[in-house]
Image (cartoon, rainbow, N blue to C red; front, side, top):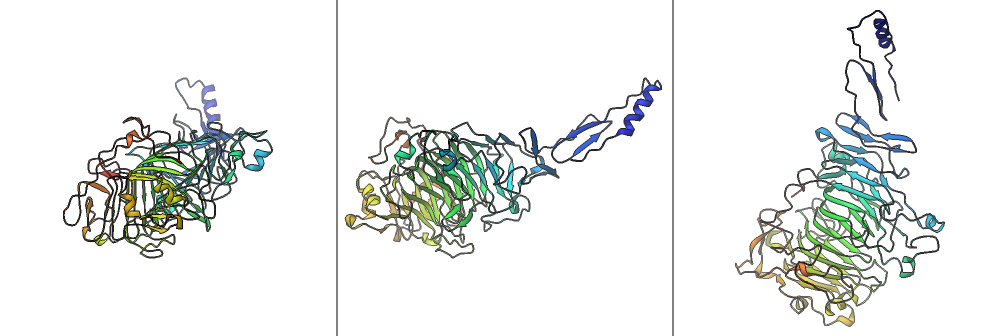
Length: 558
C-alpha cells in the first residue's frame, strides 16, 4: 500500500492559524484506503471510492483493483486454493464495467469424506457463506479451468432482471468483446454442490454417523469438490435472469465442467430465467437432488442442452434448446438413471417431469459443421439407463430444409430392460407432444424381454394421448414462427399444420394438476387443477409462443 502524506500543507495551515487568520479555512487532508492504493486529498470533501467487491477475513480486508471501468481480482482475493469463506457481494459496475477474476471463485469450505470422518461438521443449509450478485453485474474469468463453485451449506443469490441480467462469461467475451458462438470453454462455469440425494450413495451412507449428519460424499467433476447427503429440500440460493456464456471445460474425458452443474441441489433452490450459451459440454446438468427449473434456455451447447442423472427427481417447465445451423451439439435432453456400467435399477430412480420443452435440432452429425461437436449428433431426447420421464406439451423438430433431422426421440435399454419396461408399465408417459423431422422416434437398443416394443405405437397407446409424429409427406410442418427462414426460430405458432396444410392437433395438457411429490417407480400422480407449486397451466405447447414470449429481451444468440 502506498501512502501520500501532505505534511507540508498541514504545517502551513497550522502556521496560518497561529498568525490569527481567523477567516482562512484550510481543509485537512483526507485519507482513503483500499486494497489497491491510498489517496489523500485536500480542499475537497469527496473521497475516492473503490467500487470493487470486498470482504474481511481474520481482520484483513481484501478488495479488487479498480482500473478504468473494471475490477480485477487476483489469487490473494480468491482462487481454487483460496476459498472465500465469508459472505461476498458483487455489485453492478458503472459504464458496463466488468469484474475480472484471474483465478477460480470458490464460495464456502469443502468438507470432504476424510474431513467429515475426522469429525468436521458437514455444512448444512445456511451454515456457509452466501455469494450475492447484483442485477446487471458482469463477471468474467481469464482461464478455462477457473469457475464458480458453491460448497455444501453455502449459497449463491444472483438475481438479475429482464433489463439487467447477471452475466457470467470469459475475458475474451466481456473484456475483449471478441467472442463468437464458436468460443466455447473460455471459463469453467457455475457448479453448485448440495446436500441432496444421489443414487451414487446408498441408504446406509445417507444416515447420520457417530460424528456427522450423514456419510454421503461424492466427488464432483472439475477440481475435487464434494456433494451429496440426505436433504432434497434444502436451498442453495437463487439464479434468476442469469446468462452463463462460453463456459465448460474438459479436465479429462468424462470429467467435464458444464455451464451450470447442479450436484445434489435441493428443491428450495430457485432456477428461473437462466440461459447457457456456447457451452463446451452440457448447458445444464443435474446430478441427483430435486431442484426444479422454469424458463431455461440453451443455445449452441457442444454436448447436451439439459442432462439429468444419478437419482434426480424434479420438474421442469418452459425449456428451450436451439442448435443453430452449422453449430454442432448433441442431445436436447439426455436422461439417465445411472452412469455407464452401473446397474440401471439403482435407487432412488431418476424421474424427470418436463412440460413445454422446445428442441430445435440441426441434423448435424458428430464432428461436422462450421463449429463441430465431438460429443454426438444433433438429436432430440435420449432416454436410457433405467430413466423415468414424463413429457408434456413439447415440440421436437429441425431447423433444416424439409426438417431433415437425426433421431428426435430415442429409448435405449442400456444395461437391462428397465428403461423400456418403465414405458410399458406406465411409469414413463408422454402427452400432447409433436415430433416433426425426417428421422422420428426410435429405440436403438431393446432388451430381448422388450422385443415387441414399438416406439411409435407406444406414443399412441394409453395412458399416452395427443402425441403427433410428423414425417415423410407431412414435412415441412408449420410449428414455429419463421422456422423456414430463421434457424433460431423458437416461438410456437397459434395454429400448427403439416406440409399439406392439415391441422396438427395438440391440445394442451393441464400440468397444473400434477402432484407436487411423486413416487419414481409408479404411475404419475395427479391432484386438483392448480395444485402444483411449480407447474402452471400453459396456453400453448412448446417453450414459448407469440403471445408468451418470455425469451425475448434478456437472452443472447436468438
